[in-house]
Image (cartoon, rainbow, N blue to C red):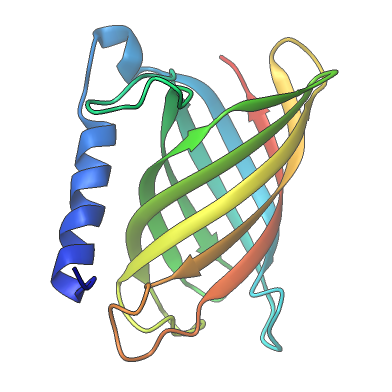
Length: 173
């Protein structure tokens, strides 16, 4: 089956809704809050500065979740650039411990992008794929770097994409 724009849009909506659908009351409260600051469009000439935040919820198993796959961590966040772009997203990630306090966190999401004079990414629906490498510095604090890519996945005629590298500080309440 070919991946049409309509099917990708429905899949993105289904993923975001299934992840953000409340489960037990404890699963709705964030277990970690992350703040980010760094460079936007790092692989292009029109580099910029960005800042953002992310709420990470308790890991859980989704319906039709394979037993061999670790529980996923639902997340919601936002990013804004100094030139006026805004991206709000929801998604999920995997927590993969590397040992000695190091963690690798691949994550994926979908969201809405608003361009106000910054880089045009082709349309309002953008997908985010990221990887975070972080080190736990205390029981409640983690420091790391996140590299992520924004793209509309070919939903629109224009699809330049954008890459960012940000410093991430995550804290448990």
